[in-house]
Length: 105
Image (cartoon, rainbow, N blue to C red; front, side):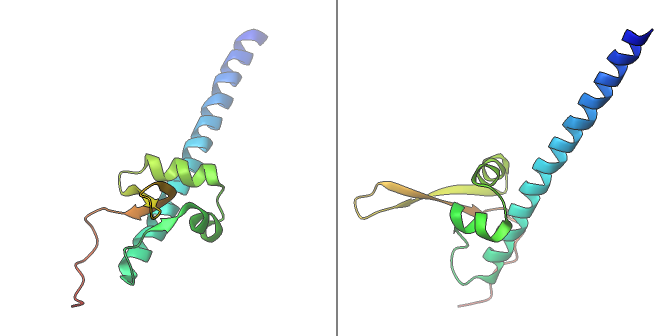
């Protein structure tokens, strides 16, 4: 009888742990999408931000920023190149179509 309860409890704990992990990943992705969307909406530049910039402003680790950026359908990774054309940095940019068109000329 005890082993049956232990198996049920183990399954419940695993389910709760996975749910918390999934929610944390979703929260990181949504925070990144929201931040990049607002940066793009300001229209002062292309809205591209480096991983280091995002880490500082979102209080996320490098791994969290990279994971959220690569898992999102609304964010595109853009390489930053040097004068020789080599990729030396990584930028993330919001690319979803839900932003209003700019009225600036």
